[in-house]
Length: 283
Image (cartoon, rainbow, N blue to C red; front, side, top):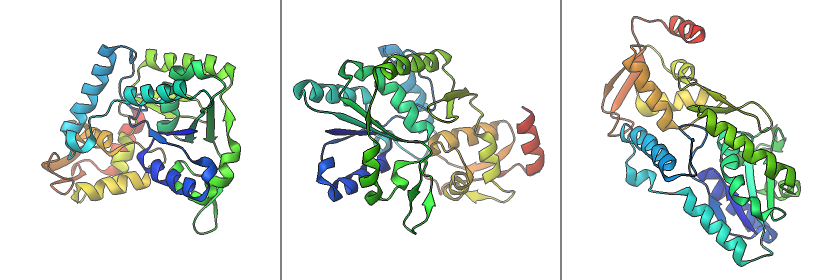
C-alpha cells in the first residue's frame, strides 16, 4: 500500500504508527498545498495553477519565510508519481488519511478526481467526529491526524474502507462546485461539507488574539492560533493582520519579512477591542 496525507506533521506520526505495525508498511506521500484558502479555479490548466502559485508567492514574500524555506513543490508531480506506482503494481492500494478539518478535506476533494480510474484500489480513512485516547489517557476528538497517538492508529486502521463508485461520481462534482465558487476561504461545516467564505473570515480571530500592548510577531501568532477553533496557516493570518493594519484596525511596526521577532503588532490604540469585535460582527 501507499499512504497519502495532507499535513507535514502527519507524516512523522504515520511513520511512527508504521513502525508499530508492519502491515501498514508503505511509502508516504504528502500533498503540501492548503486548498482551503486561495484561488482554486481552473487548476486543471497551467494558467489556473500559475494564478494560484503567484497568489501564494505574494503572501510568502510579505512573510518571514523565503521561497527556499517554503519549498518549490508541485503537488501535481506527487499525484503523477502516485498514479505511476498504481499503474506499475496492479495490486497496490492507495490509502488516503484525513481528519476533521478543512485542510484535509479540501485536499481530498482536489485529489480524488485524479484517482477516479483506480476505483476499487483507493481507500479512505476519515476520522470524522471519532473519539481517541490522548497521551494522558483521556478521551478527545482530534481535528488533525498528528494529534493522535501512533499506537491509536493501530485501531484506527480498522476504519479503512474503499472509496465507493458513488463517491467517485459525487466528490469530483463537489470539487467543481468549489472551484466555480472560487472563494478565498473554505471551511468545514461537518461531514465533508465545505462552505466558501470571504477573505476576512479569520479577521475576528486575529483581533481576538491581539491586545492593546505591543507583542512580537511570534508571540502574537502563537496567541492567535491558540485561541482559534478553526485553524489556518500563519502565512495567511499574517496577510490578514497586514490588511487590518492597512485598514487602521491594528498597528504594526518593524519588518515582517525578516523574522517573526523583527516586527510587533497590537490593537489600534484608539479602537477598543470590543468596538473592533462589534464592527467585525456587523460586517
